[in-house]
Image 1 (cartoon, rainbow over the protein chains, first blue to last red):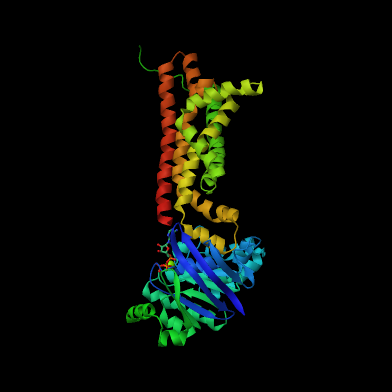
Image 2: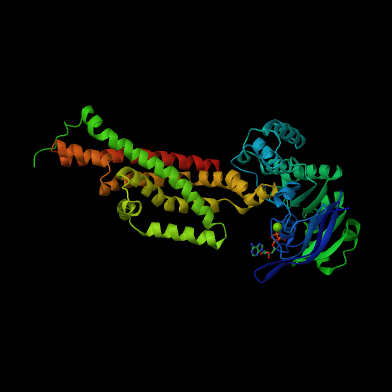
Length: 244
Length: 222
Ligand SMILES: Nc1ncnc2c1ncn2[C@@H]1O[C@H](COP(=O)(O)OP(=O)(O)OP(=O)(O)O)[C@@H](O)[C@H]1O
Ligand SMILES: [Mg+2]
């Protein structure tokens, strides 16, 4: 059963086409990793999934609901799609706990107490229970990103989107975030991750999508992608990043 | 002209001539600040809405207000109101409304810069949680914009406080007017104006120091 389905999505910035007829799907419980060179449109693609970026053509369907359709309650739909950003985007004026409870209280209408309980549980899960009263600026990058994941999980999402969650981190902090993501994947969370962490992809991805110049060039099961990518561009890209 | 004599400046004079004027100047400053920031924020949101029918009128309003001298707006509003409504409004009320509307233009430019100083990623993060546009603005963007701009907002308020002396044009009784009246009464106008300058200086200078401290604090938080 498809959790996320993209059908022929195209997007333009003025006359520049960022996404060219992109189609793919992520089934329930699947992890799909999206990679590709800088500027190829990965962030744009993943932001189209919950319509943070509008697109001009095509359709995105999440759990049976069309994102772009006129009658769709976008906030309600987005609340069920967790999103983690490259630069964390925690709310700097709110404490860690408030970051975790804001959406629960304002969007899901949970009581403050219920939201806090959930927040505490999730902080415990990402190993940051002691930091609840601090502010984002007082945490390391790796800690902030783990809070960001907890914030998304607090909404009990149907699926999770990640946009290069580790690429802004110092090398020694990458693993603490990847560990949380691996655990999530193993629990059966549906995930679409823009990432160049091929170790992570090897471990948990079902499929790998390779993008170049706004196109989905390759969309293959992990084994095929790492074994024998069909396109030349993907081969070049892989040889480049696997050397590092 | 003889030596300066400020012996007439005593508690009695303060309570008789200055206190009421001082209270009005402060009231005018605070009301115009609160109202100005509120209306200014709305104007800023209109200008950033991306909708021409909201953005254009707001821009026109702000640019007009910023292109005319305040004293002229004060006079015009004071003279125009009885003409339009058939009843005079009184100098004090007229001053309060004029200052609020005028300062809104300046505060709106500050708030616009403040909103733009918050990264787009914060809007995305708010939206991704399912917050509506209004919620994202109110709970995420505006608090940060306000915090980032607090020193500038306060600096504008200091200017506003200085400008309140312009209400002399319509004969409202403010702090400066208090000094002037006292000076006339004791036949010591020069001393009265000197004292007035000193009082304005002390108030504005202490507020500026507060702003400086705030700036340093905000730099640390960021
Ligand atoms: N707001 C915008 N206006 C115009 N062009 C844009 C805008 N945002 C992105 N682009 C362009 O769209 C293309 C795709 O951008 P996108 O951020 O999706 O790439 P990416 O694959 O995520 O790259 P990176 O690995 O650097 O994050 C780039 O060429 C970029 O310059
Ligand atoms: Mg990107």
